[in-house]
Image (tube, rainbow, N blue to C red; front, side):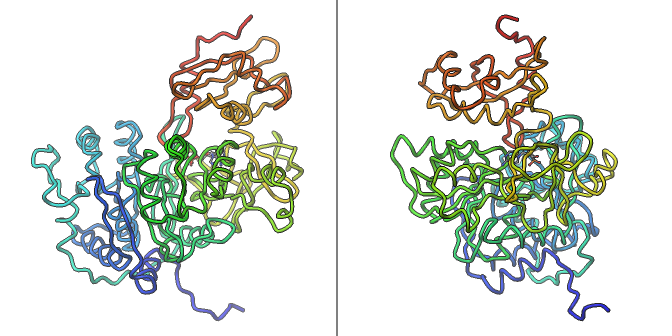
Length: 542
Ligand code: AMP
């Protein structure tokens, strides 16, 4: 016997319809590429998303055709989120930090037909447009009078002249909720990038889950600053969860430096912000010297890379801001776990609570996870056994776009490539990427643990731990360190700093001071490139 409830497909258009009807006057604030602050409301987003849908109809774009964006977090990007997916096309967000050759490769692989880009990225578009064979329409996300005449890009139009003439009436179509809605290519540190293709259903279920109290805890009382880019995994789904809850959205545009982010948080009374650790490092770096404080910020979700304990402590103790450590990946839409305490933890002393907060957190309802050993045997949830982390759920990838890389699943589970422990309360802790763990004398050393100790030293701005070949131990860890401007620390002082903080055999064999650690397109440390840079490095005494 089937249930007798209405079978309404879960579609992205319903989010913006809901926000317009119930939160029509809630503000969306954007720092524009031009530098000024733009403000309007969900009513305006809804109107203009419908204009985008009409503009796509007018160029005869078919159901499931791809519309690419190369854009910062801002209101026009938001309109494309709803207008493109809502009308049945697929929004393809491209990471502008990728190499131009890779951008062209991705646009061709996705068969993008329209490319919408912020003027910041005009030089990239000028470099790649002749190589993007499927793109028929080039749209610059700017006012008509800001469009230069001599760009060399055939048929280039401004967004405002392209969509501004269209009607703001549009009946969002109803279709199968399993239809593709958006896509994002993985960072692709090895080989060509592969695309995760999200569906309306997966996006809406993820948006619901992301808004839950033990996840991002979003509400109509929040003012939310997604510093996580809309060009990478849909800014962790915040644009969708925001429309679902009716919270105010504050977009930073291209200004991601500490001063600009701080000013925006204060001016827009931001209560909740989400970003990767490097962004928050810049923010704290700006605030500390001037003794600045937050007036409204209550929570921040930090993920994308392991959050150093020193950062969680600084936010909590010096600024009264709760840090929620999160973990996920492109293939998971992206959220998998988030770290909040349980009722039984509330009476624990601060130091005990801190040990929990450092973990990547508990699975969100909808995400099933397990850890397995090399033979695929499931390991216990005791907080000690570590193994490959596998996940499954309705917003987790089944297969890559165009079947690239074959079937990625192992008995229906997606292997994340991360190595983790899970404790008896279900708190997962990433110990490493499987390719980054250091295998020394048959034991594994977590590069993240070694890095966390180094960045707790007051003179260290950034640290990356890699394994170096060793004739006896197979591999030994060394730590590459970037010093804070004007700060000093010697190799010996830093090695002495490890004493008592980790087992002796895990202390790195050497410290290498470097000017910078290579970062990938999503702000993560690129250890492959660091290993290349240090390829002639020899361990002392070997
Ligand atoms: P991406 O698909 O580019 O978002 O990268 C996903 C990968 O980032 C994960 O598989 C992890 O290796 C890493 N990652 C994400 N969040 C965290 C976190 N909180 N701690 C450690 N690693 C993380």
